[in-house]
Every structure is written in C-alpha cells, then in structure tokens.
Image (cartoon, rainbow, N blue to C red; front, side, top):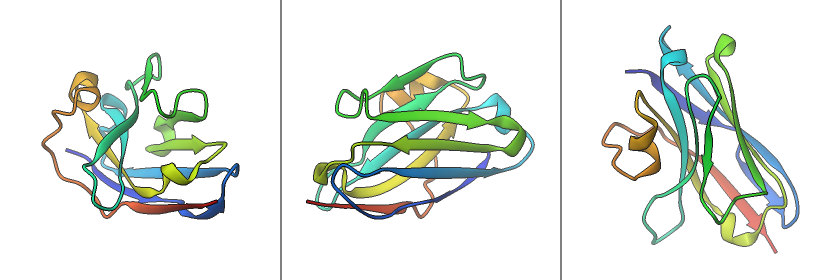
Length: 124
C-alpha cells in the first residue's frame, strides 16, 4: 500500500482556483488508481474525483464536473486536483486515497487509511 500526503490547500475567494497535490511514497504508485475526497464540517466524507493508473479514465462527482480536473504524474509519484471557479460549498478538508481498483474509489467502498488532508476554505 502506498502512503499519501496531501498539500496545496488554503483560503481563496469564490471564483478563485487552487491546485492540490497528493504525493505518494513507494515505487508502486503507478499501479494504483487515485481518488480525491472531501469532508465538510458535520458532513460525511464524499467522493470528488478519481483517475486510473494510466490516466486513461477519470470520473467526477456531479458537483465538481466542469470545474475540477484530476491528473497525475507517475514519474513524480504525485496526483493533482486542479480546482477552478471555487464556491463556498467546496469548503472542506480534502483527502486523497489510492487503490488498485478504481471502482473502490468511485463507489465509496474504500476502507484503507486516510492522511491528514488539506484544508480548503472558499470565502464568499
């Protein structure tokens, strides 16, 4: 299993952009699908986006389609989440996760560990 560390969060005004990074340790990152999730205060953690190991397929929650883009650089063992046109309702702690099966990430059945996440706050 890979270990993941999220970074890149911050405070941004509505309409602004942020790029989150998910850095992986281990040499097997390229064989894992990667997903981004978020958890707002008092809410359950929810799926945001996922990408297959070779970047051939991406999948997004309806709430972020057209605004967020997930990508990865296997040479750098890093995945990214480019977030544009941010809205106050995007405020949350964002987490990344990796699994050999994309479906585990997109169907909410991921049971692995979570990192510390990175806080994204969007002001109105």
